[in-house]
Length: 424
Image (cartoon, rainbow, N blue to C red; front, side, top):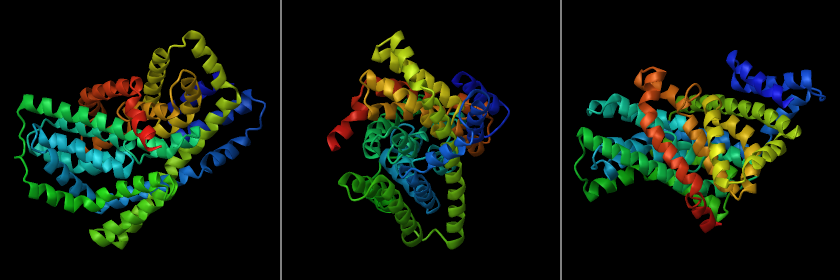
């Protein structure tokens, strides 16, 4: 049945069905024609896949990010990033990466980070004389920091399907995000120095202080969230609700930039995006269930371990599989389908579930930049008014840096495990 399930799924995708429909329908057809179980079990498995306490945090984190975005936080974070590193060669490009890192720590979403930072920084970089392809490729890639730096929606999904602590996963994502951000900033500086792009003068202490003061309320959100989680004041799911209240308070009361109409528009958009994610989660849960019920994880483990028991080769193989899967599946679907299959095998060769979660996330973050399903590419197309091919070609150099970071994160567990070991 599994041998029929995968071709059916990809055939439905080629016919243009939405991913959640292709996932659910492929399971239904496989059960109807090749299985001994009533296909009516599919909607039951879809519901049980969504009926998860950890997944309740996803709509709240999406709402918090939207409230902060329309509340004017993007402008303030960009000004802070300029004040901190705008004086280095290619300071505007480096500031764009740092601003993505800041905003990602609030949104937890890659496309949202590209929209919030790219709509401001791309026109500014082009106006300052930067090559437009370099600018949009860098911003599209830096947007992938959104789901890596905590809090991360993708890590919540991974934790829910593998039973891994979400708090530990959040801690594990910080150093890898800093590593990727540092590589992108270094690339920006070297490229910009070669092209002799302008840089800002070295800032005064007063200008840095003013930038911190203006953005302090926004930067306080990740501090409150992570501090509350690690101190035990609230769970990751409860922290998402706190984030919503904080985001509304800052945008409506402190910055006074959210009116009633905008607030209801944000609620509508959040509901649509949350519903989309949960539908995909439901379809992927049914797909993952049928894989598990047929013993596919055990068979895969036996085949892989009979080929090689080298952790280096197994993790290299898994990286290739996840990179290819990221080209065709969104992060949520890929995590729900692949993580239950691969994580037990990785554990057998000594890879910690926390470490494997970060490896999975970085792989699928690269998938946000690869056609045909790379969401960051489509968002960047709307910002830069370029074709999909032009955006992908522009993003290739920073994608190579992402792959370098992926290899370092895969084979040096320190990046993923240092903070969880320290905090827990």
